[in-house]
Image (tube, rainbow, N blue to C red):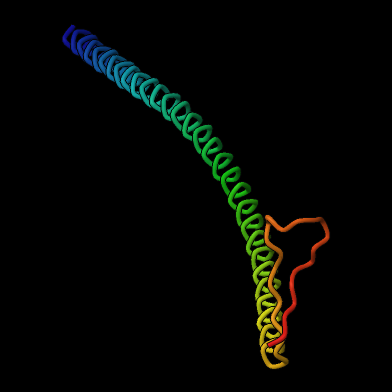
Length: 132
């Protein structure tokens, strides 16, 4: 009977070890599942955060693009205005030069022209020329 008892006892120990191994694996599997669920939750949170950041970045890119367009339009307008002012300045410089040349010629020839006075009688009075 000792052989049967020892055999039973050995089987009982083996069965107990197998049960413990199953419990350990189940516990480890549960822990891995819990860890995996935690990782998946973190991943979902990070994905949501990343999508929000992408949308924010898209908005900033659009705003920056709009600002660039407005800046380019402003620069073009300023360049056009500058060109117009430079042409006007050239015209005024030419008019001034012409006026100074005419004045020198008039002085050289001894003829002075005086513009009409606002209180002068009669329309069409073109001014007064006088010789020295």
